[in-house]
Image 1 (cartoon, rainbow, N blue to C red):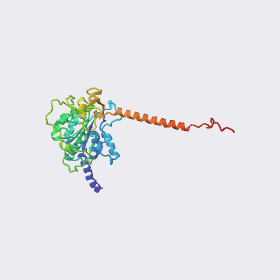
Image 2: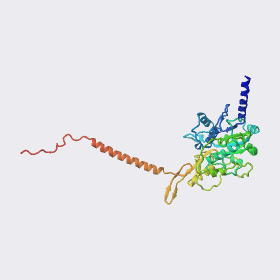
Image 3: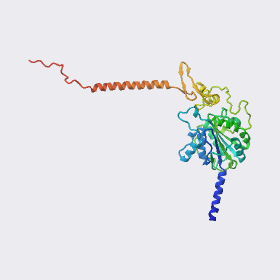
Image 4: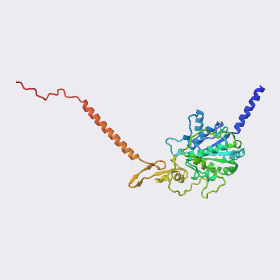
Length: 379
């Protein structure tokens, strides 16, 4: 019995050490219920799939080998799913994912003071090193934006969803070293909490412990995934946000000031149908690709849906109609319905003619064909 206890004790100590060194993940969302008493343990690969779902880049990440348990994690922690016939009440909030390095118990206590309840939604077992985390965040930025974002964003602008120079579309992921940014990060909790409460933004906080900063895990701890074509140059341009960098006088927390932007073509990639501000709509769609203008579709200016209203253009006497989320697609529905209607009409006429000819052929001939023909004269 003593021998069994002596063999079991190192196993228990190792398990406790693994749990203490695990990364805790907190999800702040107005539409998500409180954390469950049972906190699941996810692998780095499973955490990657959850983050990809949050950022809307799951098409770069294969689910061929995913288990049912992994799929349940994606459904539980991957954010709101887009409904087929969504209304303004189902408007999805923007997504902010923050990978923090050097998390300590003191920081956790400060977060409890800011949020009241601060319990992890899940843990990442055997968290990767700082180098692997930075590489993963860089790849996610390229996947979600198609290019590098501005590297001159202060921390205040980086967590502001209305700061269009630091955000690309509806999601953003960033890496933050808490050794130099802890004070600035804690000072922004009121603004972040307000954005979460008003359904403007969901926040996923990945708290990497200091003990795993230089862990010896593989750089490919997050597994393999695809990258956009030609993304090598964009990777090299991405840097961390600067907490002590210069702050723009017009960039206040969660401000919605409208700035003058030149007309430009909408960037490649998926464009959201709804935007939370007029400025974000104009920037994300490139002023509706120059083929329209943004307007308030429903709601209020503080909490509404801004989308593109497409207009026709006339070039050398040719009128072109535009459509799509960014008015970047030529609307050929009129030509399509004209061609389709003519084709259906032509098929109908041909079918009617064939049917009529078949019906005539089916009619019975007269009983006596020669009834009206006189016979030969008698001699």
